[in-house]
Image 1 (cartoon, one colour):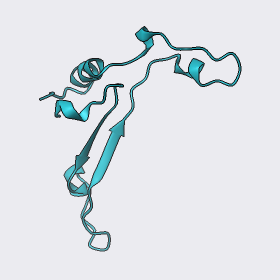
Image 2: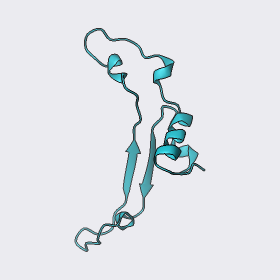
Image 3: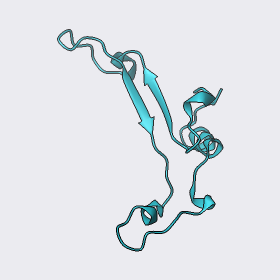
Length: 82
C-alpha cells in the first residue's frame, strides 16, 4: 500500500477495481463494480472526549499517527508500505 493512503490521524483507505478480485462469482445481472475500503484505527478510551457528562480531552499518547498505523498494518496484516 502506498504511504499516501495513510492519514495523519491513523486512518487509511484503499480501493479495488473489480469485486471479482475478492473471489466473488461474477453475476451478469449485477455487472462489474469496484469497492473502496476505509479503516479507522483508535485506542481504548476515545469515548472520554465524546460522552455527554464529564467530557475530557485526550492526551497525546491516545492519538494514533500515520507511522503507528503503518506499523500496525505491516505487523498485524502482513502488508508492505511503499
